[in-house]
Structure formats: structure tokens, C-alpha cells
Length: 421
Image (cartoon, rainbow, N blue to C red; front, side, top):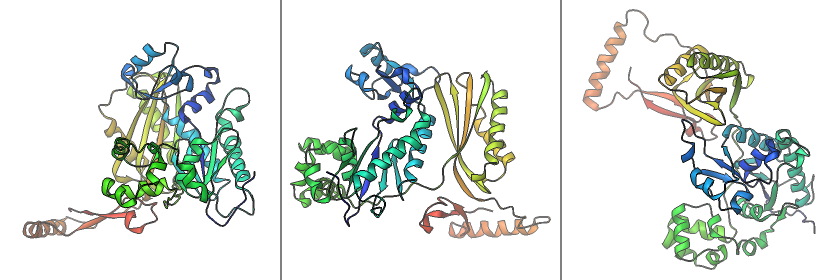
């Protein structure tokens, strides 16, 4: 029966099971039905030692498990199709998935690859029934977000998207894990504790140590935990004990946090023929810097962090670089990037490169010298400050540095750092 709306909050959980596997099969439909195994990105000939990160159902049925080395995979399943993980592709599909959800819901939280929470509260005028609303959200995710990334016939059916709703995030998440493919699963507030009871305690979002201790105590089901006294849980598990007990009873006060408004600015370049020397590689990097600098999304902001990745055969080489000072000039960015990459050896011939700005700072502002001229005043000031430092252990001077300029909490946007003139 359709579930009508009520005055209590509703949180939806939209989930794509085994997201990396589904993302690979979407662009390689010829691999469907075969034992597909995804390994951690490697470079430099270390593929044999790479662990399994995800595998298809067909591979799991033959004994392949996450964490298993590749050499054991080959011995366990000779028909396995080995693929090196492609984080860039997964993130691109995931971002499109979230974009589609944001067109349907007022707030969307990015929980993990292929997993998102949506705030469904207050949308009763558009959709009087929760199940209809969830079906609409799933349809939007498939049609607007995922369809463009699928090859082969019927691309709208390439991704298996599950959906569920509950009074809070934890209940909605567990419901999404159990939701069937055909229809969203709705858990009403008064049903939450009974619904959670048979589910495994390993689903709790707590530390591995707490999960290990729960198993040692024989508390394998949430229903077992819900029957206990909260003070006993706190005595055994400390601060996490109360949280574990509340979650087992369907109580979750954690807020839904919409994803950060800034999205990485990325540009990619494919070489006509694979290159294996830094001269040609650097020409491509300079082109990418020029492109990202002209992107409208950057505006006048400076660069604090970037990620450079290169495709080498079927593997991905990636390097993340964080700058101590914000960079507001493309020429300076090129020079600093060249210094950071000096001495780095390419592990093979590169067919494509991607430059992604992952963290921006405030607008670039030039400043004239504080002490122009011969610098006598500056030298005198340094001498005075050295004397102050020798006596008191510090100069007492600080400079303001941006830390998290996007944060809603003013105290987290900037930090004071000791300044030595």
C-alpha cells in the first residue's frame, strides 16, 4: 500500500550497490555476466601485489573476496577479468548522480561513492506519498545522471539503483541495504526498532574496535543490543556505547549535511600517441593549467590544492599536491608544480592526463612592500623582534591563513600562524 506523508521528518537513502563494478560494466557492457575483479590502482609493475577492492557477483560466487591479492585471484578464478580501479571515472559518474538528485530534493548529502542521503521533509505538496517521491528521485538519478555514462542497448537500465526512506539516516541506510530492486522500502518511525532488530551489528557506523568487541560479546544483531541497558553499554564501550544503543533502537540525531558547494575544476588532455618523456608531458600540463585558469568557476580565487593524474595503459598514476601558500598566478603555479614534480619518474607511456583543482582559496591580492627603500627600518625591526623573542620565547606576531574558507563556522575559515619577518 502507498505510504502517506505525516508531520515527522523523512530521510531518503539512494544507493547503487557495488558502485565501482556497476560503473565499469556500464561502459563495458560486454563484460556483464563475467567474473569482473577490480584492483587498487597500481603503477611501476606492482600489479601482482595489488589487492582486490571490488568484485562482481559472479566473481564472489567463485571465491573472490575484497583484500585478496591478484595472484590468489588468478588461482581461485581463472576466468576473472582484472580491471585496475579508475577513481576519476567513478567520481565523474558519482558527481552526475548527485547532480541529478539535487534537482529533485532540496538537500543531498554525499555519503560515499554511489551512496547519498536526501532530505524528503516538506515535499508533501509535490508528492503526497513517500514511495512515489522515492520512485521519482530514482528515475531522475537514472535518466539525468547515469544514463549518459552507459553504453550498449537500454542505457537507462544499466545501473541498479536502490532506494529507501525512514525517520533518520541510519534507519534509511539499513533499509536501502535491504531494499529490493523493484520498489523503494519505507520504514515508519514506530516500525524502526522492529525493522532493525534482525540486521547485523556490523552495519553500525562505529570504530572497528567496537565492532570487534560486539562480536566477542556475541552481540551480532541490533535487536540484541536494543534489549540491553544503556548504562551497561556505556560502561563497556565508553562514549560509543550510548551511540550504539541508540542506533540499535532506531534513534539517530545526526543531521543531513548537504555536500560542499565547491566542486573540483578538472581539465583532461589525450596525447595523439603515448609519451614517456617529461618534455612532451610538461607541454600537456601547461595547456591544462591554461585551461583551468580560464574556467569561469574559478573566478579570481587562488589555488590551494590540485591533483594530477595520468593514464598509463589500463592503470592510473596520481599525485596530489598541496601548496603552503595560495597560488594566484598561472606562471607561478607552473613554476611551483615543476619544482614539486622534479625528480619524479613516469612509470610508463602516458596516453592522457588530467589536472583537477580540488581546493581553492580567497581572491588573489597583490601588495606593495611594507618597508620600501634601503630596508634599514626592516633590519632594525628584525633586530628588535629577535630581542623580544630571546627574552619571551616568541615575537607575538601572527599572520592570517585560510584553512576552510567554505566552512559555515567562522572560527574554522581562518587560522593564526606564527610570523617571522
